[in-house]
Length: 287
Image: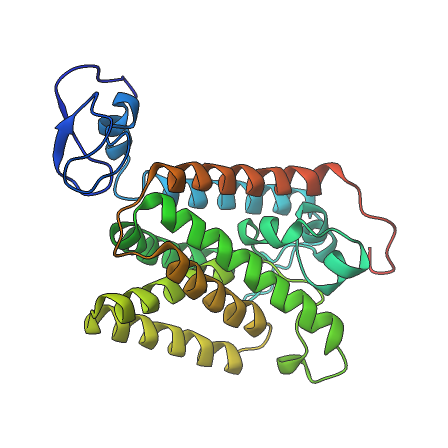
């Protein structure tokens, strides 16, 4: 599957034009190493997103099942929104973010790990559905490397906003107070929406812009109505994705350094999950 091609022509990883497998630069878009050392055909076989959506789905599912296993005896089995809900202390150990972990326990890396964790069955189902819907679309418009960067930026800004609001606004009603503990891919999902909104404005695509704004507004209003939704993470994720989209500029071709940055983003996210699991949490009243 990942056999390297050493002769002939390949498709440029950025613009899709044919180039020589050993060409140093694409003659159409100017990208350096357009054949990705001969692995471009193998990577394209993974799909437009280079397998990122299956990766997110797989790791999130494994993390959710593992957290359920460690929550045995404290799993919510009530039929409803929290069906097969994970124990709070287990989520905290796995890398949940929020004002308590970030500012109370100094687990600052959880702004990365929390995006891979989910609280219950409906939570992971709907989040993975939206990742599947939006990930390939952003990858097509920005390129797979920049899509991963946007996804990560949404998580970092979203969970930082939620954690900060939870620390500073904790005395306000729940809808305005931020989150003491928060998980889920929704901050990153709003980051993808933010990038799509910027693309619509930058590229003049009214269809992309209107659809992305419609999705974002619908999901944000839904979050204001439903209990337990982290609206600060959603708003922060949208802002992070929008700003990342602006910095990355979708009207310019994706470059090799974007792919390297994407690999770094993934590595840091996985290291954040590992750090959470390896570093024990101190005794807490509710644990």
